[in-house]
Amino acid sequence: MHGSRADNAQLLDGLLQGLPAQPVADIAVCPPFVYLWETARLLKSSAIALGAQSVCADSLGAFTGEVSAGMLKDVGCTYVIVGHSERRAIYREDDALVARKFLVAQSQGLMPILCVGETLEERERGETTRVVSRQLQAVLDVAGVGALATAVVAYEPVWAIGTGKTATPEQAQEVHAHIRSDVAGQDAKIAGELRVLYGGSVKAANAREIFAMPDVDGGLIGGASLKADEFLRICAGAQAH
Image (cartoon, rainbow, N blue to C red; front, side, top):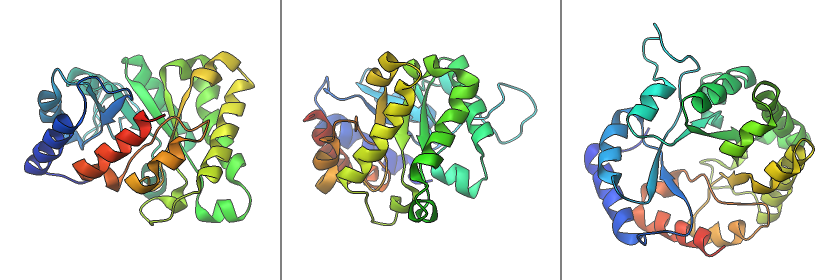
């Protein structure tokens, strides 16, 4: 919940000026709902895609305050984040609800960015892989592994979001490899092509090292995405791999 019309215009102008016309890496921005339409207009004809931060699990009807997948598609979204750790923790979105959101997003032609990850307490109890597998499997149970052919998975170690802490590249690689292995157990081809992003205090200073890991395909960037120069340097780190 950051930004204003003026801030967004400045940020997007900085990105559009700083990125090559055809970046090697896929790049998307996910502003708050109220700025989606204007952001779509500002990004028109650019290589930057548009995504939303969440979506209603129902496709239409009397759900005051919610925004449907069809509406997101209508204003120009390509992506939508589902199951972000803040939605799970603050708004009590459980695995079943996240799976419903995943399904409804795909039904409208959006590409879900499915977030999975463990809390500090879960990591300290040695439950990281169990938690991540459970969150992933909840979606696979209802959508099938084939759905991951048109989806992205993002690993968010909750203990490394907004805390300044970052999983080491090796810690990130370990969990990313586990995610890919889980998927490979059901479909090796889809697992090999699946994009698995890392989202946990990625900064320009650590992006290249994290993105160099064999199973890290990019980043889900938080606070560092609010500064054009910082985000451009992270994008450069992704394009280097």
